[in-house]
Amino acid sequence: MGTPLAIEADGLVKLFGDVRAVDGVDLRVATGSVYGVLGPNGAGKTTTIRMLATLLRPDAGSARVLGHDIVADADAVRRAVSLTGQLASVDEDLSGRENLILLGLLLGLKRRAAKVRAQELLEAFGLLEAAGRLVKHYSGGMRRRLDIAASIVVTPKLMFLDEPTTGLDPRSRNQVWDIVRALVAEGTTILLCTQYLDEADQLADRIAVIDHGTVIAEGTPGQLKASVGSGALRVRLLDPADRPEAERLLTRELGSVSLEPDPAALIANCANGDRGAAAIAELARAGVGVASFSLGQPTLDEVFLALTGHTAEEAETDEEQEVAA
Amino acid sequence: MSTVDDAIRKAISSTPPPEPAGAVQSALAFGWRGMLKVKHVPEQLLDSTITPVMFVLMFTYLFGGAIAGSTGAYLDYILPGILVMSVLFNTVYSGVAVNTDMTKGVVDRFLTLPSWRPAPLVGALLGDSVRYVVAGTVIIVLGLILGFRPDGGVVGVVAALALTVVFAFGLSWAFTTLGLIMRSPNAVMNAGFMAIFPLTFLSNVFVDPSTLPSALEAFVDVNPISILADSSRGLMDGDADGSDITISIAVAAALTAIFAPITSRLYRSR
Image 1 (cartoon, rainbow over the protein chains, first blue to last red):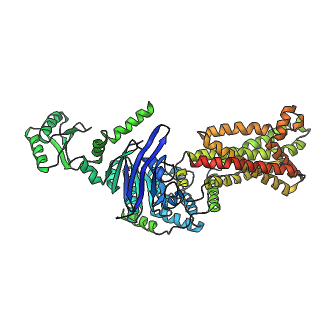
Image 2 (cartoon, rainbow over the protein chains, first blue to last red; image 1 turned 60 degrees about the horizontal axis):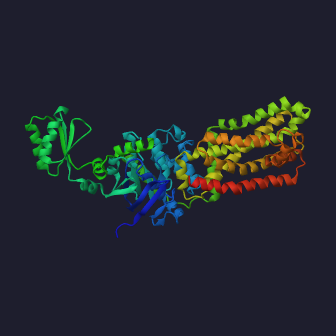
Image 3 (cartoon, rainbow over the protein chains, first blue to last red; image 1 turned 90 degrees about the vertical axis):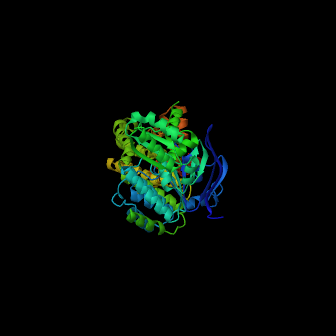
């Protein structure tokens, strides 16, 4: 039935005291794909990854990674996967080169081969100049690249990437994305956890949206967007003072309208280009100045809002308040 | 970006997966990791050897005359004991190091490797054993400078150091367990020294226990550190007591048998 599954999880549960951090997660990840696990902080993404990577034992449910049971056959899983954790999974007190040599030795390379491999990876990941420096003095982007290099000292069949670009500047983020694409092109399956909707949109073939420890939606980025509704007309006004008037007109023309955080912007549901154009014409006729408008598919931010009733960012704030309370 | 892509693509496809390292290779690799840390921050060695060095100087010159009649005679008595103390103090740092490790993401990577599971711990303690040897050597060299001339000769001194390091290897498992229970490296340090300080002082490292009140003497006599210090003294003097040495090794083995499995379990389920 098509490609074999790299990950097959059924009803995974993990409890931390009374908290059901993961509450019945099912996943089907096809070999050779990038599978995005999307959700706000505290949704259970990292806990799910830690169970699949054999770092945590599930309290209920089961999972097979590349055909091996994660509990009964954990060693076989470890032979085929590698983990790039949320905290950089490299040793800060060693140099970049030493990190790679150490992993080479642990993965069974002879000392000489481990050194050669470290050199190859340092060159490929643009870390040659920093090779002798302690990792604690690396920038965030360099640390991430080393982290990913460390994950492919022996190329894994499946790689777990937990929030690989959190805290990175846009340039480093693009570099990481390019590396991920190169890995996939060479046949590695990637499970990518992220709280960035555009990251999942950019990289993932399929996405599972997780909230409060359960999968609330699953599909290709396109399917997820389609499930929310047709499309959206985004309008940005010249003068924020015109927004109430624009809201009234667009609601009349198109139905549902929501206000953006930007005081000059609105979004209206709109499937049909002609009706969108007519609505814009209506604004012009009423003398409401439009700075820009666009008609397109909803963003994953909107998907998240439609699925959970809150945006990813709001969920994060809730979490913090819960912790503080 | 295409050049980076090409280089990465090449790096990805070029390695056939080898058989993962066995128990010995992986423990040695982690031992190498421990030694690299000493190489990068040699000051940390100073940290753990400075106190015993001060003790040698202070006790010998301040109290030596009063306790043993002359500084020379006291040096003969105290030096093998301070060797023990110096090495055992270092075992606390093994616990601190494990605790520090646990706060870092790198442990996740170690635990997802297909290598022998206790390797990170065993390897760290092997690396630490090198530190123990250095700490012990510092004390011996200091003693020689101050005029310590043991009858047991080189063989006796080396044997005393070796026995002490074996004992320290066993004891360090107790501190790695502590290191995995406590919340912060500082807490490990405090609790560790709270344990090791009284244990070392309530031994025969500094004074002959026959001068002590009888209850205290009874404790000091059965304190394994006293027995180890006696063995160390015996080996350096060239008249070692076989049963003391056997007990010291047995205690090290017992500590390992009890605490190594606990440490390894805690490490996996952090």
